Amino acid sequence: MKQNHVAVSSFQFKRTKTEGLIQLLNEGSYVMAEYSEHTGAVKWHRVVLATQKELIEKWLGEHYPVQAAVASHT
Image (cartoon, rainbow, N blue to C red; front, side, top):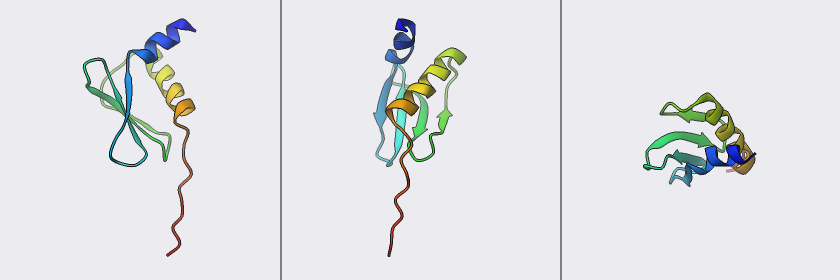
């Protein structure tokens, strides 16, 4: 379990100005991936180990669950 924490703790998670978009940054502040709270999809921009990728995607889903779209009635 501690190893899982190390894999996720070496990254930063930051909300963007675009609503529902979370950026995954590495220690050098490079954008590694973007996560959509609207769809739950992760768009990877850089290569990471498959084991880290799985842990990060699971962590994102747990901490930033998919938000239901709000229908606007106009």
